[in-house]
Length: 490
Image (tube, rainbow, N blue to C red; front, side):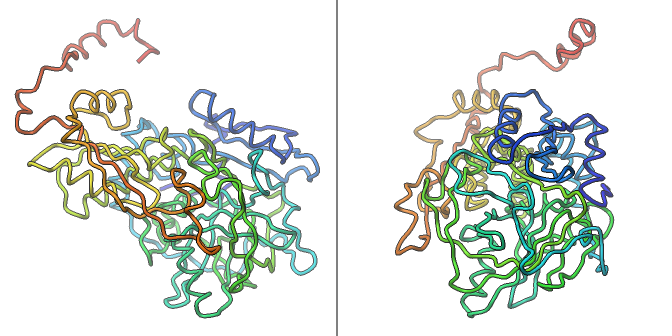
């Protein structure tokens, strides 16, 4: 169990572990983003949480924080996993086992909480009273929603969805919401607009990182309560307030909550914005019309913390988090299908997380590797550009081993497969901008996916060429005899 009441308790634990860095005096316009990008691309691991204060033009105490879940220890701490087992595949196996045991825990509705320390509404609303960053040099605006949760209620069933869809400031009391086709947030929005109804909405910023983890999950099934799942992971029910303006439940211990509404056929230009894939992939540098959020109220704590993500050319602040989430999500899908023999999965975050997925498989029958690869390739609209299946002697998180298997065990004319016409969406950077819109609306898009069977041919696997690698016995003997020499190296 994690038992963090709020973001502040979590950040205190991270700082005591030595994984938090304070920065004073950086400007909201590009400087914060540039510092974070430098750290996450060039600094040694573990990359710290970056907390910015004394931001020019804002009161001291109005802070931003980047990189909440960007180290293996922070992921283990958040998800209640062993903190001394934080190699990538240790994380994978531990979370794969633990998530099977978690049971949903219903939230508790309370009348008030710290997020209600300050409330502004009407003419007093000004979204830029917070130090909202402009992240990249070619961005078309300032983004208040990058490490947050969007709260919506399905008009047909009453199910409350908690998802992460980027949010741009479009005016002192207006926001632009970008949720790509196929996402739960986009489906819910379309239901309201098709009925000609106004959609209530809430934006939650600065929450317990367990909830943000869940809000970002691409495999969360329709109808599942992220609030209940967060309670199950944490071991304590979330405390929620029913919003006085929207009626939507939001965390009582959040840093900032924005309540508003979206009206049918009301849109504004959104973007461009540098995407998680490392490109301006929506329509290049052209803005796209997106739904407007009319802000009705802002609630916030004293000295609020604005949580942020910094997407860019990977690695960036949430590639590791996506790699961990996607790898376990893919393995669960394979297991639900009934596919045996899966020994591990890793979504390599050098490929933006989800775009290059590797499955370690104990081959049990002919066609087993191809079956696993095809099933895994359909995991998500944005995922699975390349799916590689390797034998179970390969660590799927180790790209040196994966590439070795690909180039030495794959008969390219037989074991490389291109699957055409798979679902994708407008964030795909391989599709030209002019193919993404039709009559001013987003088109339904498809794209091919590649499955590579990098396993040894099952028909002569037992007679395969011997591997030039030390035995486990020799490794253990060498480590024991030369432990003084090897200390700190291995």
